[in-house]
Length: 129
Image 1 (cartoon, rainbow, N blue to C red):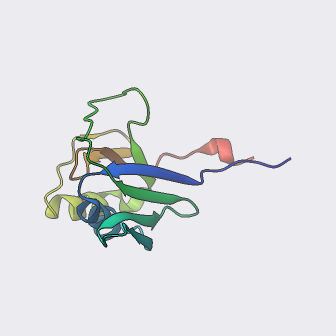
Image 2: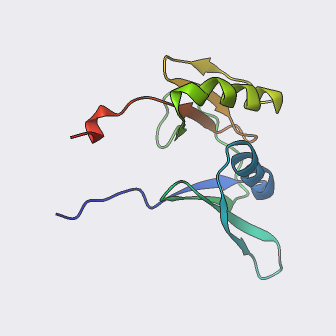
């Protein structure tokens, strides 16, 4: 049987460079590619999600703010080791990012365009068979 896995996520951004820097510099996602329009302006930046790609794509549309569970994609959660979560939070808050909420395993915050993001150490036992 052939399984499926995540290939990529595409995130529209008005300021591609700023959003790419947030995910690359603060959340340590390695940059794998940049794409430009024919006039040379930045169209997209692709970041490695550990086997999948986060494609930050230029858009003129205004950001869509989701307060909790919303229609469509409403959260990008990145894995972190439980013992590193506090260090991640300190790093984010020292960069001016406000932690909006916490659960036992997950910390929630927003990127510069208001997209909900989380770092989570939730143990997915469903993958251990």
